[in-house]
Amino acid sequence: MIRNFYFSLKKYLLEKSSRFTKSRLAYPFIFILCFLESIIFPFPQEVFMIPMMASDRDRIFKIACFALLGSLFGAIAAYFIGMYLFESIGMYILNLYDLNEAFSNFSDKVSEFGFIYVFIGGFTPVPFKIVTLSSGFIGINFLIFITASIISRSVRFFLIGYIIWKFGEDIMKSFENRLNTYLILFIIFLILIIIFLK
Image (cartoon, rainbow, N blue to C red):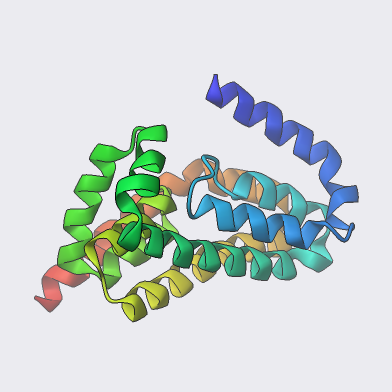
């Protein structure tokens, strides 16, 4: 059901995004969307970002900037929810999407490896809300958290923007199909670096 909704929504956005991207609401929309995605929104922001970027090549990197800012402000809000309001708001969010086990597993890794897991969580398909809430809950250093978030989210959003700007949306669709393979290889590479450094 969710999958059907996802594809229906994507098709609708492809048809409507060109006019909307040129409107004054486009940038506030992408900011708010990415803000909420870092805390509670269930769908990845790329569902909206890619059609918007593809519909107006001149605005690609401005869209990426607003996505980055929204995601970072959302990450900060979620961090403090995890730190101070976890038993109420944090638990509600996890229960809403049945993410308790994923949260527990990720929290253990974040507490052990810190920066690298926040970075991986911000760059890969791991729900970013797990990263942000768990980082606040276990009290990871805020500077480490925000630095890893800035780098990982920047790489993700601007990489998508660059691919669409350079090659067009068709290449982005092909890239999306192989994204999980690329991310698995990337994670293996990072783990090997950690092992080597230790």
